[in-house]
Image (cartoon, rainbow, N blue to C red; front, top):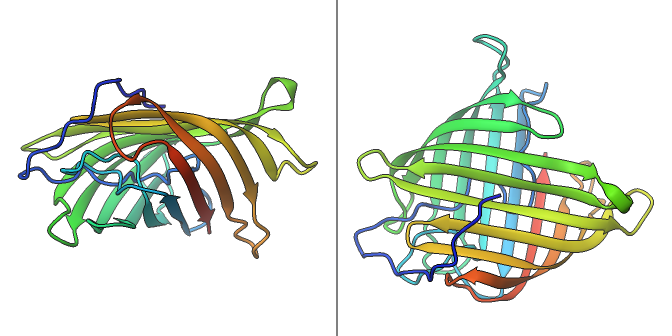
Length: 249
């Protein structure tokens, strides 16, 4: 996962626009291409304070946000690598909301337990706080994997760049290690490590986590409740409770 530096977050200049909320849900491994034509994911991250994962004048990174992504799987039109097109909508839960839409094309050179996605997209600001720019990104994940002592590891990481004439780099990720609390391993408790970095902003959080899958139809969304203690970096929000609800369909 991304390893941000411990430098303090610096407010960005008024002329800069957000790097934006990540294309990958902040709680789940990146999905791999499937045999279904259509798939999607939605997520809601609540924190007791903060803003979107964006470059902002308040120096905030990793705050409350919501998003929706729809994928259209195109098969293997060229060679043997799966290809997909996607649309994404994201925004913060507090002002400035900075709503954003994106259209992209992605290749999936790896699938299975450790998938890999590489994509290029056009981001479109839906208000004055967003940014219109092209973005190139790569994302990978570790789907739930048993490790020693009955523990289960999972996580995601992504990195990329936004803008052609003025390029900003970004990275973020999350790793979770839990001990199942039931036989089906749908509920677990353990520790999490998450972080991110953008120009002038960086943070690294760690803390206990409880997560479970909710039996709601065929979606079975994931609910994660954790305490995020900021252990490096100076970006806001500070340490506090984070609740994430995410589902694939």
